[in-house]
Image (tube, rainbow, N blue to C red; front, side, top):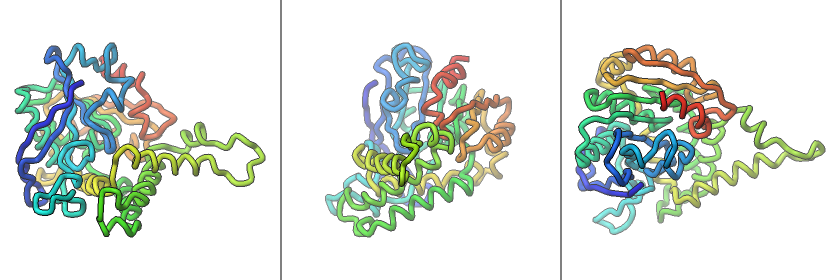
Amino acid sequence: MTLHEIRTDIALEAGGSLENARIVFHTSESRKGRVIWICHALTANSDPEEWWPEMVGAGKAIDPEKDFVVCVNFLGSPYGSESPRSIDPATGKPRLLSFPPITIRDTVQAFIAVRKHLGINKVDLLIGSSIGGFHAMEWAIMEPDRIRRCLFIATAPRISPYLGATVETQRMALEADPTFRQAESLESGAAGLRCARAQALISYRCFTSYRLTQAEQDPDTLFASRVGSYQRYQGEKLVRRGFDAYCYHTLCGALDSHNTGRGRGGVKQALLRIKARCTVVSIDTDNLFPPSEGREWAAWIPGADYIEISSNYGHDGFLLETGKLTAIIMK
């Protein structure tokens, strides 16, 4: 897939604006076939062949050689679109803590700007998992006549108290790093980011996944250490991938903003606006978006199908249960 960028002005829902904002995105090289638009998850980028390789690629369920695949890097991400990394013209330095609060709807405005730039009238299949599902759902409500089919995976129409608690705990980890508030460079707050990522991972996985992958191999181990090493590795891995504490903090705020019912008479009334043919997928071990929640709100979307899949990997099943998701996409 090929990387592109556009510039656009975005009026922010929380006030203010991003002028001449940079929006980066990947597309198939060819414009043939269906338009398949993928909304990426929290720490991913706009190249789905990189982070979803079993789903996207030649001969896969989503084939960029057969269909026109689009994925936009959302606002606040460190991977190209406007974010705390963007240079403040007044200082010549990254904006860091001065970057304004953004919402899920702000990023959908960026999606719409890209759609118009590409001359896309209809999206044949819109796919969103986790926070990507937040964006996909908002878009299906904001432009109901533009979306033909939606696949919402491991997501919800509004942030829950449980998810909100995990987000706030991660934010506390960022803010506990004394270098975070000093905001001297993009490297500031790195220790807090490592901790926040390790905390997040616990909510992404489940008891079974840790038991299967991180159990001690020595029956006589005095102090269990394998999983601790794994948690520290995952925190360090995110930092090495080029993430920074300020983008992570901004994205935590965007998560908090998610409420499809805001200004629309509530979530039920908002979901009634969706005209696309929708499939809602829950994962049986997902603690962030449990099936009990998914079944409830899926019934509020006119004609939606609800599917529950089994996984040993909790919320991260949306990345790992590729065979089951392929069967759903190919229906």
